[in-house]
Image (cartoon, rainbow, N blue to C red; front, side):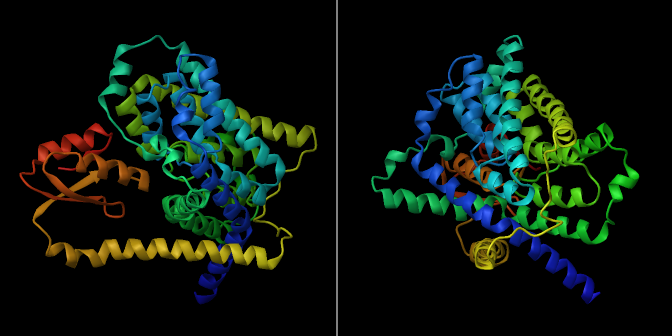
Length: 423
């Protein structure tokens, strides 16, 4: 038993070491993007129901490091500022599939072919979704959905002018990268590495090749597996890499890399409620059909043009040890801090809260990342009478204190930003 646990930990450590240098570099670029690109200026380019607005939204969305859940309030924030429906759908599809952090990590695990292919697929699928939205007949009810829910997103609305010093901007960017962004994905990154390590140890080599026919069947299985699963673009990488070592083709692994980060059950529910079923249908069909198409295209290129897609789960990249393990140590340090903070919020604050001003506790459904937490927190704070609101992602609970609190008012505020109150 101890031997199995030891092998599991070593396998997870090996996968983290392969990903860490590229992931760290990606986080740094993500922080610089966040700090030095003024987002209010971005919105000005996304107006108009045209193909051009969809293309611009995809260009903006591909490098942005947002998960499939965090992208929803950002996209609706863009819509409220005048972005067209086509641009918003394009942004929703292209953004969560990749980002500067996952592009670097993809290169580290699969090489340049996949590192180029992945953002290209995100870009094309985003444009396709935006164009499909243009082809829909205008429906007033769709626009009512957009206007009914008022989701604020500091990621979409924050101005870079708030920080006059380049140093302060840089420090804020690094805080965003290693505190906010890594905090969003740390749990899912650890779970992704754990799942990849378990697959590597338990599943025999060529397991899928022996049991699943090649071609479309493998890709359909990966699509069905990936669409409802919540996994960020970075955490999906080690899972796909290990699946390739077990007999899944590069194209089938790519289908998972595309559908897993782009969709999840919670996001689909929110998009359906906030934007309407027509937009949700376009969103899902664009991702599913293009994932199958790009997966087939990648297999075609590898077979007929001699392009090679390798998996770092099967071999070791030749980077100096001090870079590999220095980056792994840095990420481990910040991930540990996030888990310590979660433990403190989950268990230690209960005693403190017992002596606070009497308030009301709500169970919020549908939250999956810190973007959700900030959105719900701001919505609750804006309710008249509320003096303090604290939302905890791990437990799904929101504690609100104040005077003359109305449960119905709090429930309405949460539902207006796309989430639900249980009970």
